[in-house]
Image 1 (cartoon, rainbow, N blue to C red):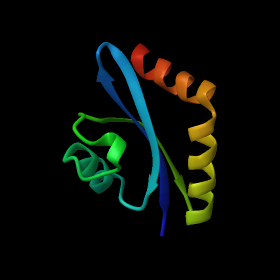
Image 2: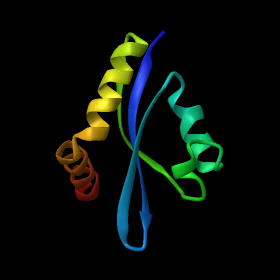
Image 3: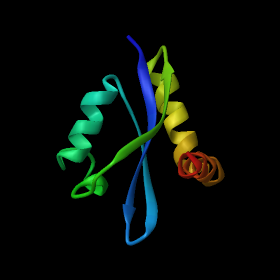
Image 4: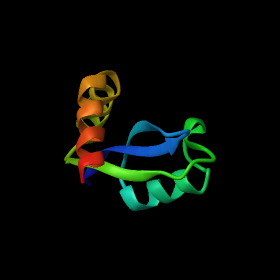
Amino acid sequence: MPYYTYLIVSKINKKLISYVGYTVDIDKRIKKHNASKGAKFTRGKEWILIYKKKYQTKSLAMRNEYLLKKNYKLRKKIKDEYLKS
């Protein structure tokens, strides 16, 4: 069963905020975030998926979720690429 690490963004007061997570079903998870049924931080905001990466194991997805959460330079690079498109 594949797992995904993902990065979603939302624009709040002209600032792009981001959230990183992992899941099995990426579409269902984004719908939950947008329905205010995801993580507490994501409630009440409109989220857009800008990055996802597939992994074969849960432990790999969780490890890479942690790395992406802590690596603000990489998150900024991904957000900047999104803004260019």
